[in-house]
Length: 318
Image (cartoon, rainbow, N blue to C red; front, top):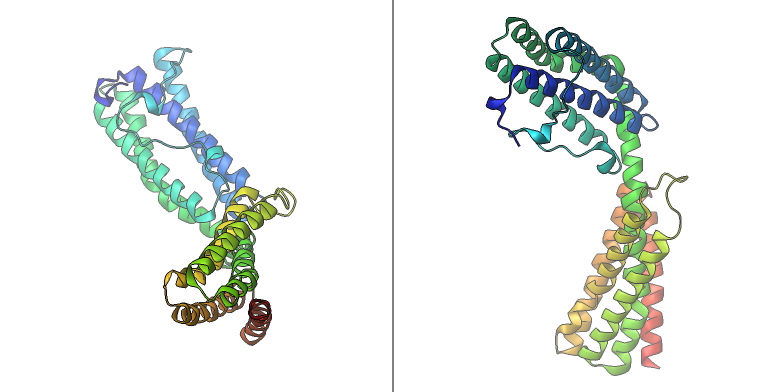
């Protein structure tokens, strides 16, 4: 790895060419990755890629004039001081805000690079081009805002944020809610059956933990294997499975933990309160994210929960 101050003018231009090629490809990859869900933002990013392509051609023309046809491969990781940047294909599903934040960082880094490179250069022609590109990068933020206002109107931005919300619902909220409901409701019967059959805290706790973990593993695999997300747009199956499994286990553990209290009736009272809180949270999530009317959501969850709870108590008391 070489210090920036030790680069020759030929190496400076070769590095600038490499950086512009990378930025051009990055903007193009961003545009392609967002094209299906956010077509207007993709147009804006495509226009940004064209801007970088213009910079690249000017650098190439000057390099050929000064140093000939061969351009040594000098990359950002070969020079000290550059921020490490992950390849777009390693970033996973592209989020709108993440892409825009990354674009801002790219522009800021390019602006600093050209300003410093211009100060380091002694050749008049190279220094002039680097200063021009530094000035253009400073204007790039305004250009980005101009392009954004052109391609991403208020209506489009609202529509794209709605798309983002739908993706969040399909990939996180729906599997998480399914897991929380299953863990909170389905484990009530074995837990309270064991509680009223033994009237002892520790055996009840063991049954509750076993039911929660077993349900979490089962629901996690069921969600992960249900579909791969390629056609439904529901995202990574393993992410959904992990979310679903964790929320299932959490829902089941919530009302099992009170049975760590040695006094059985105290533990049972607290567990019943925890169940009520869990059911209220589920009803709120259904209302907040799934647009289910609050009364309807509460009725569905409470009735189902009470039926399972009653089933466990009846079996345990028989």
